[in-house]
Image (tube, helix red, strand yellow):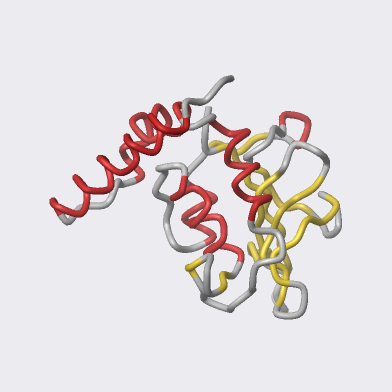
Length: 165
């Protein structure tokens, strides 16, 4: 898919100005409009490309700003935001924002969630990243490594979620 970057940049500026003027953010219930806008920027492949641009960036627990550091849900939210898609701040909300898919269905831009089990034996989501379409997940690893690409199965996968259809 060929992308007209200047038209995309102009559209993004106009939409940002409108949102700022109205004081509103795009809500997850507007996924159809978000999806259309994201597709004009290259769709799920561009999500993966955007994620890869931040490899080496800083990790910061609770961080949501790509320039000062992000944790895993902050990274996912920030990358999707750059493509015009608003996601919830928290990992569980992000997992619920799309459609769960099998690992056989994975494509670039899908979200990968990893989990752990607490003392009582209940599972919970503990980490997430963006699949790059090349057998790797881009994720906010830790303070030492920052944002990096890891093998998709570097830890046990709990679920995969597609935000863009």
